[in-house]
Image (cartoon, rainbow, N blue to C red; front, side):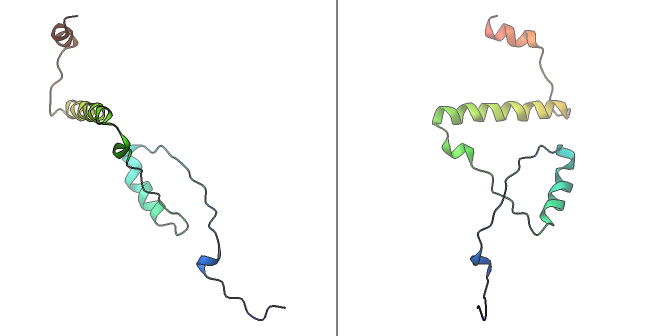
Length: 93
């Protein structure tokens, strides 16, 4: 027979499941506020993918990010896109 039982949070192993969600960008702030208000949810840190890239991969990733930043500026009207024909001429196609 047990006279007393002292249980602390360290006495249990947390069984957790991980979920990946795709949330529309315009709803992300609301969703994060909601999720952070739940006391049973732990947010995992995003892995630093760039730290594990080779120098060539880092250069490629930098170019991809730059391309998306330029696309965003065009979509926001902060920059103008050039015709595809201009690119073809530059590439000699």
